Image (cartoon, rainbow, N blue to C red):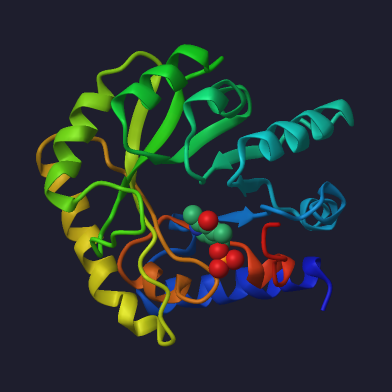
Length: 229
Ligand SMILES: *Cc1c(COP(=O)(O)O)cnc(C)c1O
């Protein structure tokens, strides 16, 4: 199936997941995760109406961002969702409008300093406390949100998580539920956590049930990725 058709099928599934969850479909937005795919593969998805794209690698974001701009396409909103490296922050800040993978104050400060416009950020939570993954332990998250939200040019708009990959997406449900609870706690403390970034190709329907407002979906649109060399 061509990617444009997969996009439309996915959007229909997202709409159904919203309705099953008793939520208006307008509450959930899609980030098409295009990491590792050449720019030519983004075009049909853009042509089919997709405007939010997510990238994991700073140089790849820069290259694709520049290329689209040079072609006169200036209505893509880029989301950076990968690990942040200090020496590449300027590329991220130059192109992204949303950064989903913030945990360090120093990174957020540098992003704010380089961004040409206020940057919306999500604070990453290591919700399953996995050794191998970044993100903050839940009990440190809200304090960090408060610190980062005070920085110049930075708006903390929500939390993000990447739970362990499971065979059965229902196994992610307890993690998504904890993310929703942490978001509610943050709101009660006065933080403007209006967004919640969670859910990928295999489990977006479960994430939507627990309040996701942004789902980040890659392979269900673009197909299987080649492993990074
Ligand atoms: C790659 C990636 C995704 C998309 O994963 P799929 O399983 O291809 O949908 C979402 N979020 C992050 C942080 C990713 O790195």
